[in-house]
Length: 264
Image (tube, rainbow, N blue to C red):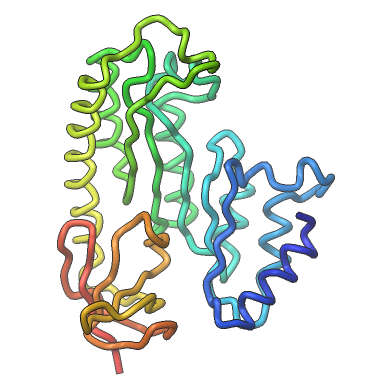
């Protein structure tokens, strides 16, 4: 859609009470390339910055190759854009990434994370990884674990590779048995759960702007800029109504979730 169409839809959503708008695409950083929009995603963010009623704009699925210093600066400098970087990293092995027809490696991924954190020190980082891709060895899985320990993402998802008929990867040598891939996923998930718990623990004492999504069994549940809907953790509040924005102090963390008290 053209920028003016996206703005019109954002205005409609915000007017209906949708204070947070999520832009999502398989490669959001490629926005505008097929429409001849010179400034692409950065210009779109600028266009949406003053939509009445819009308090948070979240971007999902950023291709690491296109996350330039200019885009990072545009996100960090836009008051409504959540400092939440959902990076499609996929793996840390350059060899496997080339087989996936993707750029980069663990070293370039770490450098990208460092550039983001330099521009936006409080940014939340998320990614997803394919485990058990053809040719992946135990050493590759170990390297991915070391990479996760080094990059310290706030959130991450892990998906076992599953061959699909007709795809190039289905015919590659070195197919990893499903049980072995599943075991690697479990091991990596366990590591990331510990990292996520530590990242959440560091939030204790901070004040966050929280959107209350719902009230479940009497407990208001919401999200700050750090949590995307449905895929990340939640903030459990002592009070609040669905659809309300509140200032809340984080008082505790339990794994992927945090607990907060609403400030008067």
